[in-house]
Structures are given as C-alpha cells and as structure tokens.
Amino acid sequence: EVIEFIEQEDVKFIRLAFCDVYGNQKNLAILPSELERAFNQGISFDGSAVDGFTEAEHSDLFLFPIPSTLTVLPWRSTSGKVVRMFCEIKRPDGTIFNKESRYILRQAVLAAKEQNLEINIGTECEFYLFKTDEKGDPTKIPFDNAGYMSVAPEDKGENIRREICLTLKEMDIHPESSHHEEGP
Image (cartoon, rainbow, N blue to C red; front, side, top):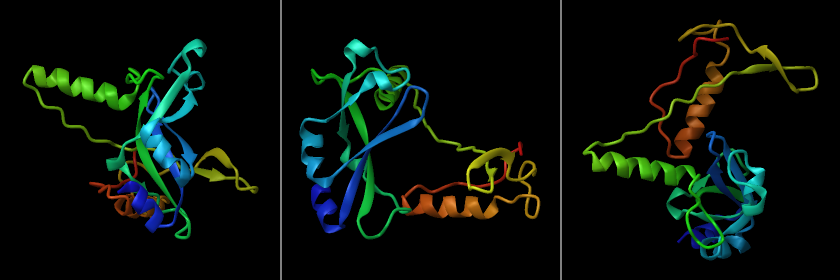
C-alpha cells in the first residue's frame, strides 16, 4: 500500500527517521526506487556517527521503515512530495538495536503492564525563537521578551505558533494548546 501511495502521490523523496538516545530526530532520504529494499533489507547507516549509539567496530545499523508512520511533510512542494516514516533500527544479524527509542518505549510499556500499570505518553514541545541578522542567519537574541501565556504585542511568536499548529494538523497531529512560555 505504501509503495502504491508513493507512486500515486508523486512522492520523490522518503525520509527514514529515528531518534537518537538524546531525543534528537535524525533521518536520511531515499528515492522511491529504494523503498522495497528498505522494507525487505533495511537501509544501512553508520551508527558510530550518531551520538550515544555504538562503537566504531560495531557501527553497521539498518533502518526498516514502519508503514503505519507514513506522513506527508506538508511544508514541502506539492509537486514531487516528500514523506517521512519512522523506522526500527536493527543490527546486521536482524536483531533490534537496543538503544532504539521505540524499542526502549515498548520495553517500558511491557514492564509496566507486568505490574498492572498502564503508560500514557504525550509530548510538550517547547522552543525558543531568535532574531536573525542582516544576512538571515540566526543570532542569540530572543525574538521577544514576553512571559508565560503573554499575548501580542509582547508575544511576537503568535503567528509562528499558529503556522506550526496548522502544519501539525496537516500531519494528523492535533495540538491541545499553544502559548508563549516563561523565558524570552
């Protein structure tokens, strides 16, 4: 179904994504012609180049896309779309890489279940906005100096957060709320 979708929707790039042990999203892009190989054999990458993953002598790791995580990236061109799929990470022998975040989460859920506990997880995305210099490069100067739940004109990030929320909705992620945080 995914391969058919890729063909029908004029997808030109597929981002295979995962998170490192520090929660930072990483990805590599493949062309649609490589997707079947990704599902069957995985796409290799150097695990030693990812902070916290593995030593250089055991660095070969493989990304296996998870079809249910397919998401069209709405900020990309409508002609020649880009999609993202999160991946399982496996070693060359086919075993799950034990530092893979989805694997760690599954293990935590199983451990909780054994104790008759249920885990519910949500995210709270917080970030800073900075001014850019005359060349358009980011500075370390805050975009505004507003405080917790401030409104315009003090909060200069309202429109940016609005665009973020609308983009998330296009990706079938439904934000509960949006507001300025404490720090400038």
